[in-house]
Length: 597
Image (cartoon, rainbow, N blue to C red; front, side, top):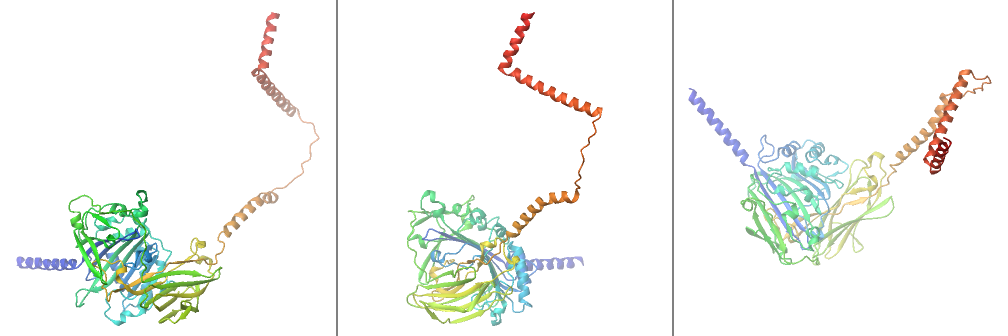
């Protein structure tokens, strides 16, 4: 009777082990590095670490980072997009970015329709992410949070129209947030291989934070698991975007654009991540026609794609094959001639933001949208979020083209409230062909309470830049050869961020209390001594006694005078004996004494 029992127990254990292995096998991990040299002399490098899974809220996790998965499932998150960026993406020189990221910290989240309280979930979520990434995301309270209608649409699959309601969306940014190794370390720990192996070993903090632009991002979204989209698959993408300047870095060797892994990242590549299904390196060779370069070692293959009628060629490397020989691999590019700064072609859409006004009271915000296409107009969507302490005059909002006021295609204005919510401006603007549209609004600066000023208040307050969205030609974008979104009609959806604005507010003299304390303490210290003596001591008039001193007193006085006289005589004799005159006198005295004898 024991054998069947034992057999059935072994079978059940095998079934459980099989099911557990299947659950673990549903996760997959890919890593890739895209290097794109530009004609301006810059080099763009973009790391992508993608984890796919069928279940984000289970009790067992294989490749999915458990800390992040628990935060997502606990707060009923359907989509999450977080970026920590330092520097400004110069789209007029570098082209359009593969992923929009405003300077500082930016977070936008879509919640499930069944979320009990979106505001409470948002408040708890930003606190959890703040601790997870060691960032100040907990300051994303209701005073900087908004829910736009058009600018941030879902990036993943939407199965129900109710999931598109703006009440489920929260967007916030902290333009003053700085990034450092405290953010990079927890970000790397979310990767399956951490910083021990694979492409993540190239993320050297010393070189990463020395670049002209660097951005860390985490994106979570649902995607289709098959072509029919019968079931959902969840995708977690961790990305790093860097912009290097090898021409400036290696200026001792002349204006050359030569680059290598060691010059860009500070080290070579030694191995691939063991759990990665694919580990690839792609080098965009589109600039090889105007600025020829030779790659070493030679690429394993070439990937060609046609984007809007323009061919794009990439040199492809398999990290597993590249590092199979052992030792480090230093991928490098050698240019055949020195670099020369040439003319950069204009982009279809360029965005510039600036301030107007003067003084400490009034201020104006202006946004220029330039349409370089001389044949057709361009429709753009503009989102501007302004903190409550910059009080907008909404009646002054206008859109002008060559000095003439035009009517926006649509507009949505949400007035702000002091210490409760920001101002939100959403506009749809049609820019005529070859023209420049200017969106402007006037405002006033508010007076803050003393405890509402940040550290170094005289530096000013940063306002988040405007977010501009449009369908633009795909050939001007930084695109991944495999993972880029599809191109419809030769155009892709592009979201751009304008420059952050630094505004000064009426600031009190915070050094005044310090000066007052020092002055008061000094005055009190100088006045305390005399006042204390006057208050605590009695001044008495002591009469001089006319009685003659006693014999003991006279003896002490005479002894003191005698000792003083004796000490003075000894000192004078010593000085006389040390001088030449004294020496001659002593010699003469000795001679007289000898003659007398």
